[in-house]
Picture 1 (cartoon, one colour):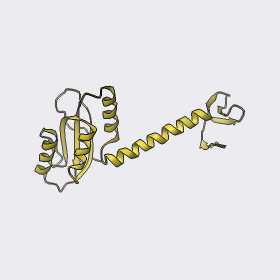
Picture 2 (tube, helix red, strand yellow):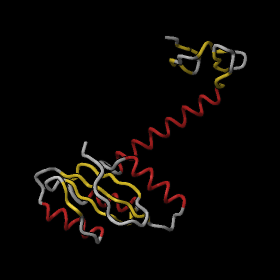
Picture 3 (cartoon, helix red, strand yellow):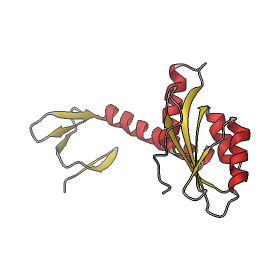
Picture 4 (cartoon, helix red, strand yellow):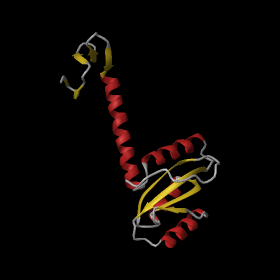
Length: 164
């Protein structure tokens, strides 16, 4: 294992040969410059901000699949005035009142969900916003996980996810 230790980092880079102090850059065995200090710091900043985003997802929308949040944000950035259709899958504990969960989903979405897995897996197509996701998570303490994907304008699709 080759560790590069310079004044601003200490990291294992298997293909890295040396750190060039003169150019302030990492170099490969063949002399190709991998990156300079500024690029490395920008990359580290990007990673730090992504980790902050992941932490915010877990804090603000606990139990919601991060990929669903990312996809929804990307769609909303493309066209902020549009509510996009998503297939939402909600997983609950086994000991919940199925009718109570169905009614809560109906009240929030205006749609009656399909119920799977002995009343622990609910699927509904709906227009989705981040606020709607927050409401789904906050409406019932028995919700374990919320996942889903963009469906466009198609009808209800069968479930695809399994509770972790």
